[in-house]
Length: 202
Image (cartoon, rainbow, N blue to C red; front, top):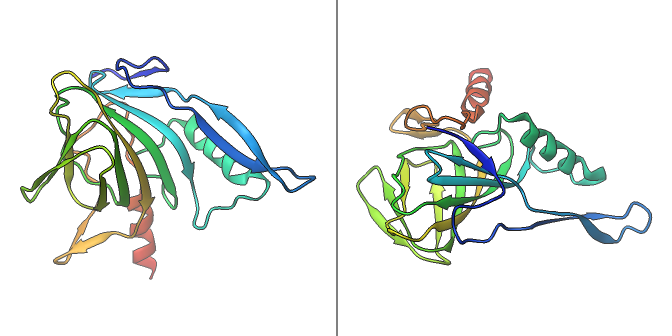
């Protein structure tokens, strides 16, 4: 399955502009640091598109001297960002093509997902299926799930904020990241490894 990076979208949905603010070092007043349209990465035969809006790499984030902006730019340029950023957060927009084939997966993270356009099905590995419409919010707590766009003609869009979390333990079993097999162009998050080291030392 090919991976494509582009600013031209295959849908009629707009390419969002990301406005990042900062402070003047002389006046202390707020002003815009940048207003940009980020490149999209399309996976799985261009049926799903990712647009990374912003990342942080520590809790709490350090905003002094634009430290977080510099770190974010390095993370994106590294090409190693998975779905989750270890010790931090990821805000991204995801576009789902018509009749997108769902991928059952789990991340070691607390996720807030907001439907921006269209309708999308949220399927849980326990068998439940819920239709989310524009404005609906899903709170994923390290659960195995899949997203399905049932429309035959229209794209759907969601905004996600993923926050790294401690391993989820259910019935004595540690539930780590599971991407349902290798996905070309999507690195593993790597946060499960860091948490495993932490737990072994505590």
